[in-house]
Image (cartoon, rainbow, N blue to C red; front, side):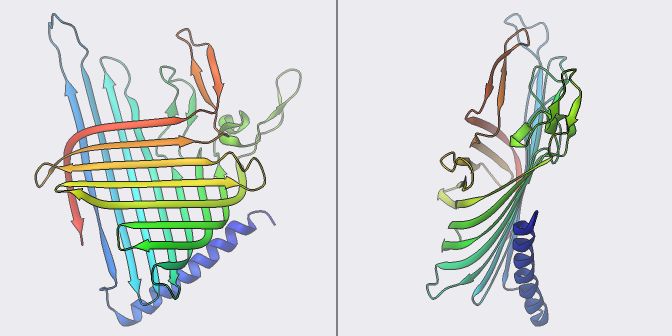
Length: 314
């Protein structure tokens, strides 16, 4: 029975998507598709030579790609998004440090009800990262990496849409699976998995599990629209409650991006992300490297950048 819910949801979504693709291929008509995206590079640099006021050389860059492919034909719709980002910064002679790292793939299939704004829907979402993560200034112990964690969400529910700029998905039947594909992180119980058990000498008796399955309710609200000339706002909120354990401890992920167009290629952007998951412990270190605290905390990330961007699609 292990992974049964995830497999069932995957099969249902795959069947619906395949049927849609086949129907569209027979017609050989691409007018039902809207595709496009934006890619860009934000950067900053500072250099000092014999500067009396003091300062530290620095170089930072962040690359990002945001793609979408949406299908709409008759009562059926299929929305797909892929968001990727990676950034690093180098201060003085220190080793480069990661500032951003993101893989976020989402696919949602819907079939309209008698009300044109509501859809019976199935949703799939995958999140992970590209590179190793560290609890700086300690850059010797890896605390995250690709597929450690990797988050999979499979959900069945209803989707409410207003045009192309707002959607609200409510999934009362949801399976969430967390993968921790790194033995050292899994043994420590990272990201909520069951940690390893040790004997009195510190040897592992039972290795930590590399996956965690949860079943509950899921909600995702997304908004994307130009709020004024040359200013675009994108935001999404994802909530998950585990029915079987501490359902009151809701997992929160809230992302926002404000993109301001300077001219055809130059842009300024402000990106924020707020997260909370009671299963993820955040270790705070003292200056001497000792542990000050270790437990769940509100996580917040903010990135302000100026750079070049290219937008394409329809």
